[in-house]
Length: 200
Image (tube, rainbow, N blue to C red):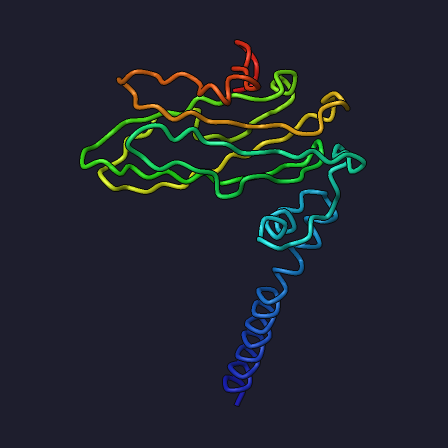
């Protein structure tokens, strides 16, 4: 009788421990969130912000919502390829992070390596047009008929002169190892290559 009573007592204790462990495991996620928010290291909240469509917790106070700049996108597609922006123009605020896509296709029946050169108009906009990600930073090798889509992520510095209300970002794509094409006459009138050491 005494041994059976001791065994039942031990089973009861083990049952309570198992239930406690289950409850602790179930409470880990809300507990982790509470600890992160209390310490200011809110990793979960940061990952939620990266989900497309999620609302950011704080607004970027460096964005100048009182100004709107028209950014026009141009592509000099002179060669055996197709090259164009996904959109021709966007309205952006200075300080606002913006992304635009460029599409490229090698229409030759051979492999090619290519790179893009950016230029800006008006020339005083170049130091204020900051590209954080751009396909112009690299050379690319494309197979015959291969299509690519590349992003350009940029921010216009709020210090851009107030007289500038429109900026044209133009790319000339050229084949690496081939002759670098010049700027077309209609673009050369108002597009100036960025100064050395400035944004690329």
